[in-house]
Length: 340
Image (cartoon, rainbow, N blue to C red; front, side, top):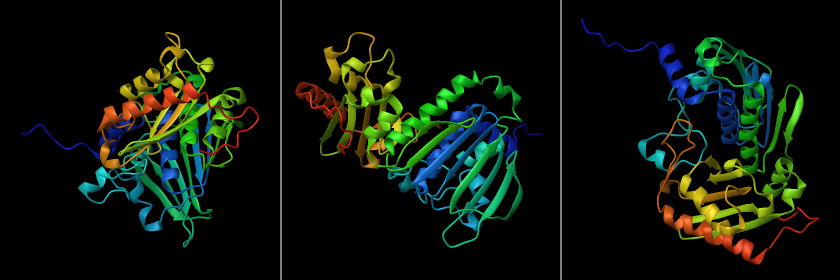
């Protein structure tokens, strides 16, 4: 008799969740991306015990249609892809249909939602199974509560670091999302304390002021440049504000935070001798490009990407940072009203 058999759905989902949901910050990232993709202009993230006890994300986006509500917790169910070719034209942050299925397999999830033209609905999912689905009062948008993360996979809880460390990772993700989407009002609240609150003005430098303080914000240099394939826009801080690690380098492609060794290297080469050895800048750079030039489907977290024509982009970043510090065009000391 054969030994190979298909995994039960619940077990398969737990395995998949191990790739997508590593820690509380992974949940925050996925839910925040969903809210942004839904066209939200206001997003609130509330966490208790650094997300281990609960994570609640409320947005005023488009909401989810009643007939789609059950499907959002199925793996590979998505509204963002229809055919193979769509994978090469992705402009949304999410696209694989993995997030909610993975989260609901390792947590208890309550989701309330309402669209423009319908009444509200509520759904409760535990261990990947829909246990309740009913009409409910709800504002337009989506309100999702994730509780008891990893309650059914206790071994995963052992890998959770201190609550302080986990909150730091959540804050980092929300900060970066806020920088890349300054037109959205984003609030992060931890155990009742407001950690971040942006005004949705559309000014990235104002968000950076919230995150890094006015002293850094007043010493930001705006950079902008184009090639036939790329457009870059961003802010780089004066070398005096350098840090001891690369954590403060934030690179985005079409609004998606990414990590890329070559682009990090380009930024450092742009600063060249302005930074001493072992020091790294505070900077934010967003790269706009045709999605066909980037493969975002390299890793489950979508942090790592593959780029076409990387050398062209590398040289553009180097030249624009060098240009910025050659001319020393700084944001006026008492004015943060500059809009790139």
